[in-house]
Length: 106
Image (tube, rainbow, N blue to C red; front, side, top):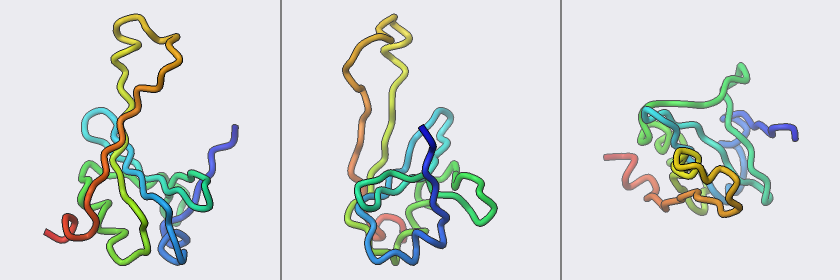
């Protein structure tokens, strides 16, 4: 499956973004994806590098003037794999709704 990408500039020029997802990885590394027209795409800079940061609020601020319906932090735990349940069909993804620019502008 081909990974869909969208540049930050393209994101910021959209009329509507269904969801901004701040994907949480180990050691507090965050990558951003957006859902537009029911399709998830990872956000890149103008050189095609994934938009990433160790600061979640920094990423939130990028979308503070954009028409975002909702913003979440998403984390997929490796716990099931660590205890030998890697073949389980249940998805252990956690998504937490986070505030909009009122949190990012503090």
